[in-house]
Length: 432
Image (cartoon, rainbow, N blue to C red; front, side):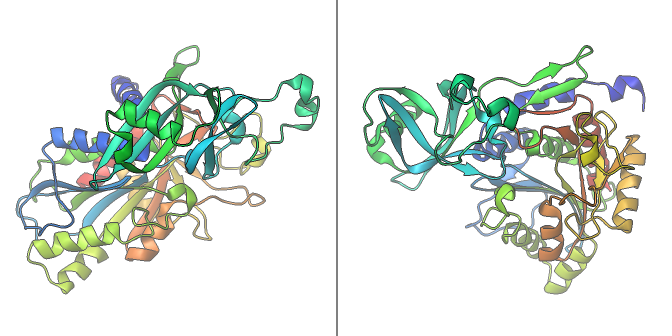
């Protein structure tokens, strides 16, 4: 790969804009959908009858999106090439009764979502985003992208053990953000959010709201070779998949031997068991309906699934210079070393030898370097949507991603070149 391509920062600049526009899973899918619309994709409703027309289509459901491109001349049994990712990130979520406080402080009651690093949310300027549900059954996106909330840390004078013994945080008592002064008033937060959204508070019947850091992503390092930002696990992959799908759309069946698909799910960080999670029926239903809409039979569906491959793209661990003993002694993924192949023989990742060969071929065609990640045997291994996708749909799945530091922090760190390298590999994979 020429240096002019490898170190192109236009893609990374665009990723930074994507992160800023996507403070919640609902915003992430709306942002991805808007980009696909510009590439000629059109939304199809799940409640409507689907036809067999060709072109780019997508389905939105909550914080999930499945998009696919059917080239001219594609047979009903044409296999799929899928890039899977997830839209959610570990964070704080507003409770059903959000108004709380004490001693003259007004606070917001929150739950802990996923395996977030709690200390990274302390003393950080936070906005509030998500969606509100209205009485007429519609939803409205909300993004209060300014300093509104703060989870204040206890002063070291009142906790002398914090430095020598480590900070100990109670998930219930210590993580409730403040957002003002005065007496606690029931309904106060939702009235404020409704006003910000331009709707009547009486019409708001439900909400899915979450604080988010308002500090923008930024290049870091002497040569700006690093990228720091929020929600890169896993909007980095959602952004790359959106770009890759848009890049291959418009080709014919002679150029595309597969139907390229992007599937970005919600709720990966807490097990994927929801109607918008990878363990739900959304992806399988969309793929089946696509086959049947093109006149296919169950036999065509079985043939298509048998030839389908999914790259499950999520972030992975770069070797940490301060904690090298936590990593496998012979596998040391580094940032800006290209995407990583994630392997675990106990199927916490779905990769096997044939999947390795398939991924290596895509990277070779894209002229993209790649690396391998495996956990230290003494450390528990995380997991992704990969094994779930493979088991639920019976399709070959390979777990890949980008190596980062500070995973599950409110602000993560990756190499500034890796997002572009990942997108290149995904584009070649989708094109077959």
